[in-house]
Image (tube, one colour):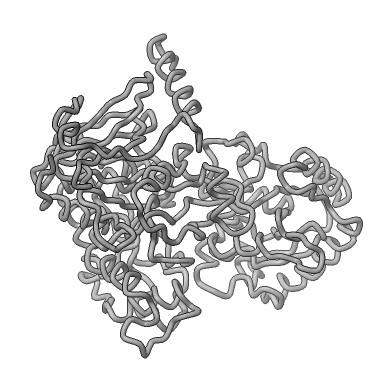
Amino acid sequence: MTQDNGSEQRAHSRRNFIKAAGAGTAAAAFGAVSLSASAAANLKFDAEYDVVVCGGGGGGLPCALFSRWLGNRVAILEKAGSVGGTAAKAAFWYWVPNNEAMKRAGIADPKPDFLKYVARLSRPEQYDSSLPKLGLSDWEYEMCEAIYDSASPAAELLASKGALPYRHEAAVPDYWAELPEDKAPRGRVLFPKDGLPSMSDGGRVAIRTMSTAARRDGVEIRTGYRVQKVLLNSAGAVIGVEALTEEGTTFRARAKKAVVFATGGFTHDPELRKNFLHGAVYGGCAALTNEGDFVRISSALDVQLRNMNYSWMAPISLEKAIAKDGSLSGIFTPTGDSMIYVNKHGKRVVNEKLAYNEICATFSEWDGAKGEYPNLALISIWDQQAQDNCASDDYGSLIVPPGSNDRHVIRGNTLAELATAIRERLAKYKSAIGGMDLSDDFVDNLQATLKRFNGFAQAGKDADFHRGERVVEKLFNGSISKKANQKNETMWPISTKGPYYAALIVAGNLDTKGGPKTNSNGQVLDVGGKPIKGLYGIGNCVASASARAYWAGGGTLGPILAFAYRAANTAHTESAST
């Protein structure tokens, strides 16, 4: 289907709008405008609402719905040309403790045990089960309690209104199901009802159903509106926002009760990534519009920034990251049983089937003696058996079926040919990876590595990295062919004959998880710990109490729904500001 000229021009305008207002540009002029009483009274607004939600993704849409269902007049101002954001690309599992489906199935999920599980992973260096708040700060503990208390009511309300019907994925485990603190290791994951059996397309389903419900129920949705400023009255209360439209005009929206930011993290702002995140992070699979807008806007408001050094991480394809490929997905499922990851020396350095967030720590390991990141980029290597039996288009698999986008795949008929091709590919991206090249003994080391791995695969036990010993590693194994004598379903000997395949992988984000500190009702706090009247934040644009942890599949979206629900209910009680 071809576009008509008008829609083609609009699409071109939208691309230029996003590019022109790119990350960190002076032209974007983010910030806050404090108005005198007379200026506030005389300021001309283009539209007036009770609640203005900035961002129409996995946090903004449900928050707008919750607010609208309370009787408020609500608008969504979305920077992109369509709603959805990062959530539209996501599998959209959502992790909901003590959900109603668990209760119906007789699965107990007591609050004290839930809090121990999340505290143990969020702050392992401080965790103490004998302490009243388990070693968490007051703020972290309160935020985690809010997730337990409100994620399920939020999910049920969305389902009851037809905005997000779900099915219970009772068999899906938490990422640390074996920890003694996790008394409910399965049952917390919900998934959009009409999604595929593979659970890979939930984002498209969820955004479709929620946006349909929003339009049905009277939420005004404006796309191509990049919010740049918040407007405050003489008392310091937020009374509206100023946005730049894709046509280049200024749009001012009055918010009688509240402005809620749900604009995503700063994955696609290289300056913010470089200055806040640990190690080299090459971008990620967040929506390209996630450029840290709220960090820049809120910096004028004396807010407290928290958790800026952490992100929801996943390995990503180097080529697609450098190209800023909008289809980029995190490598959530490292498919292939006859597949390994090696570093530039041809040596395995990690359990390839670790959960995506955890495997990323390997990329930032530092060799103090040599002054380098030896694992800055890892190389996935697989054989024809894996290519024939483990290819997938889901969950960011590097092993893709014929006809798929395979720009990242490197090929060689022998290990020596493969090494030559890898060197050529590395040279192409030399300036992005610190001049990294394969060591002179790469092929010899790789041959020894394959021999050792193959012995482990035949025995069914990985003596180096314990691949396949935890339940979550089987969850992320992907499709394999059934083999009668396979002793470990995550491992199979790599062929001693080519052809061979490879891909370069680096650290990336689903999105960042730092920003202004809020309370458990989504109210943005100033440096004194007091709520800034009328200003709310939810999702990845504000600080997460998860710290370094990624508790389970859906451990981003379940909590986001909880805080969207709480923010909407609290904003509803705000008195109108003038």
